[in-house]
Length: 412
Ligand SMILES: NC(=O)c1ccc[n+]([C@@H]2O[C@H](COP(=O)([O-])OP(=O)(O)OC[C@H]3O[C@@H](n4cnc5c(N)ncnc54)[C@H](O)[C@@H]3O)[C@@H](O)[C@H]2O)c1
Image 1 (cartoon, rainbow, N blue to C red):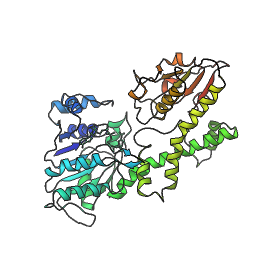
Image 2 (cartoon, rainbow, N blue to C red):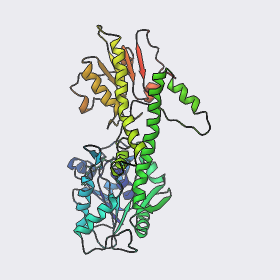
Image 3 (spheres, rainbow, N blue to C red):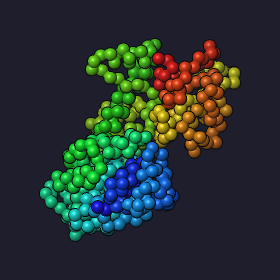
Image 4 (cartoon, rainbow, N blue to C red):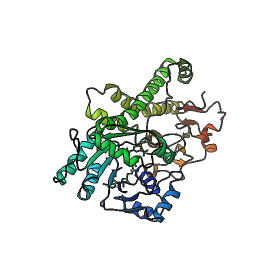
């Protein structure tokens, strides 16, 4: 079997490598020349345990090659970015570009799979692009029983850091535009997936991925809203949640400084933009989570007001969007640290055990990247991420120090 995989990032590269290590000839398609060069040397441009070894071996064996052009293959998989633009509208330009790139090479009997997290209807949009460019081919429609080109939506739900294990072992949703497309796509993933391949239609598949992330977002928003209510009512939210969770059917998540990353903070907008009137809770949850950093900054302002006239330091502990990773994309902690540095020039220290230098959007802002030990001496200590390095210590704060603990790590 030969596959052509478009987009070799956090999802596309592990997918390409795992197919290739199972004997599939994989042609990777990339728009980033630097990424092409790195992978063709048998190296990787992302951090993922175990991936480097597999990529080295499949490049050496000739099973994985990357270029900026698609080619003829048995199947095509699209793993390109799907960010939002403007007022939270999905940007499908990368998906459109990938569909146009592969369309000229598609032959009868091929299967085209969209893996990018996408608004409902995007698989049909890819089918329409291929149909428009290749009118001689009978491209799958919802009502066609058989066709020349099969189309499916197969979302990815792996956890960064455990990608290789989860790629193979997670159950996987396979949403065919028609039934035969789902069967064809399931045959392809059956090459390496040990989890169950759950066949459905493309629209349900698209919505399932968005639903999983919206579910997480709404539940985090509930916890974040509780933290604001408890602050107003002078109640310890962490004690409250631990008590409420003793109810056998209650499981409240933990509040935090907001929601970041490229999935949970993005994907619910794809539901809201399609169905704004109906998606009330999902929309509200996005706003609650997006506003939490404002509340956190307000706590720091109040603490700083108590130090008026004195020189003081604010230490921001953690910049990543979740514990124990180096991923700072859409991280609320980064935005909080950046804004505090603007408001309190020369006062802000940052600790992030998973990086060695500040990200581009924090450089030139008078922020010092310091050790945890030094940060714990600051006048205001703002805990933003519960990294294992922070969990490992039990600091004793001076009377004149103020701790703002958004994760409840040292308060519990
Ligand atoms: N990273 C995750 O944990 C994760 C999990 C589930 C779903 N997803 C979804 O998977 C998709 C890809 O995410 P990612 O994290 O791998 O993104 P990424 O940014 O790491 O990788 C995408 C790659 O696609 C390349 N690209 C862009 N346009 C292209 C084109 N027209 N042709 C070929 N290559 C192109 C980019 O250069 C980049 O290398 C997104 O829709 C994302 O929401 C990601």
